[in-house]
Image (cartoon, rainbow, N blue to C red):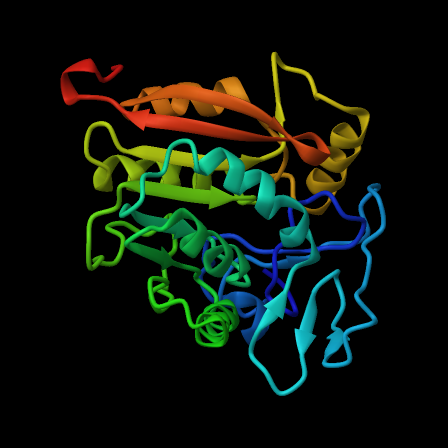
Length: 277
């Protein structure tokens, strides 16, 4: 994520983006930008971000992300817009007592909101950026949600992934693959294939093209804006993601239309004998 290491859902006018990919250090990069592939996005042609100026302890820190003075917590306004719809979908599939691994957790707000409401046994947040991990752990301490574990440093393109305390029943990834190179999507699927047992779930959230076309003019504008910043970014074709998942032994369970032209996409790990070559 970016100066404030937060990540929105990609639907607001100004936003900071981050995802679980780290770049090698280069003389052309500053120390700040070399730790992970981060960009503060220029205003995209989407609706404007609302800044919560009525919270006295919150200060605007740029790129649609808020921070608390003297506090490591970060605030992504988009989280308050998408967390309830995401919860409604996950409640139908995530059983109480499940163990969840979250990829590219960002601020940590999804973790502390979803974990207690889903009654999971554990929720393991991850992010490759140190400031994001500090925000996650600050949210964990503030919310006193013990089932949310300390944040792990995880880059989806570095394999094997760091060891986990318990194998996951569900892997979630919100708003990463469109603001990342395609290799990040492949790395996510490779990691999920290695970790998830047959029958376990992979949940993705974000904007997608369907049938080779954007689902809304605003998504087409958003896609063009992303690609103008980095030609490796962009709204993905859902069918391409589905095919890549199938090659790794995942079957598509459900696609659910979500607010602001996003989708929830749920995959299930198939038995090894049923894997697509």
